[in-house]
Image 1 (spheres, rainbow, N blue to C red):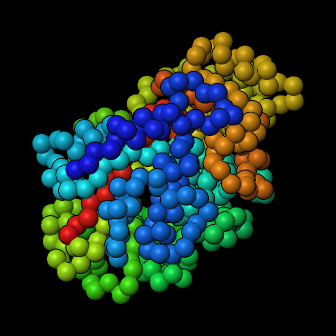
Image 2 (cartoon, helix red, strand yellow):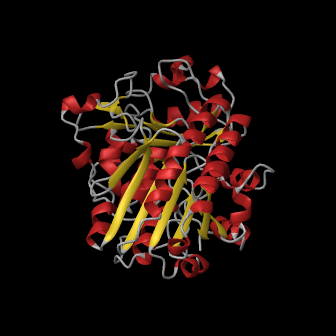
Length: 427
């Protein structure tokens, strides 16, 4: 297996956004060829589907491996950092390790914010967060006058009310200001499929991302990989893309921590079933034309539950804000009352020395932190006045409920930003 992770990580660490000075513990997103933003461009190139808006992945060895492929099976395992993927791949239980030696292992960066709603939207539009406007788990929707959860499509303060924004006129099919890539690939003759757990199949986020895509639901790893095998073994009409999303590792990492036995076991169970029920049973007649891509959208890091990070305990901060922060606990957007910006920065530094860096949101947007391209008209309103970048294991918690999280993401640490890319030609 060509292991390119070391030179690629060195390239990533050397690439900096020229107009932005961040601390050394921050990974700058490598939007010009080494980030998840660049995967859609690669898919379009491999399928001869024309160019998209941003460059394809700048790894020549990957293009060589993909040369002539007719079928791509792209598997996204949510929230697996590069270093954990490498460690889990070498676990004695790992059945994937043997197959990985036949492929290529590389490294990419996530996008900013390093979170699922933003990352999946980037992967299915080929556009940066600045362009598509999904800038976090919770964002302020000025047009609706509320803060919305961009996974559940409900007001952020609601519990168990998924889709309740629809009654206010929110339409997931038309909400994005940019087009998705499904219709683009279909128009180039690519048969496009997405496999999603039954609990999210048909959800608002799925309706947002998958127009012109044939969706399939599954319950467990076994029926997923048998269904994938059955589809890939069918004669390839011309070109075919299969997209598989698995969120189990992310959920367990949030609850138990990304280094927990539970998260590791879920990864091993998922990839073992993939090998046994799919890779080892794919037909020889299609294997040579099939490329398997295994990747993640972002990583996670372990945090400690600490009431000092709960802003309800900090009137000196909250009284200077128009409303609770939005975005991510690890990358928060603040809407600051007039004349209170300096006081907010001073409070954060005095209360949590070295834990946070504060920037005008407009400065980060203009410097390209949220990606290249023309920002959507709604983007500046959704970023607020100030953006809080976190260091070490710090975070801000503002929800009016118990803090249940051990693993978190959204920030710029290596654990959150560096993700794996494993490519294997199956025949």
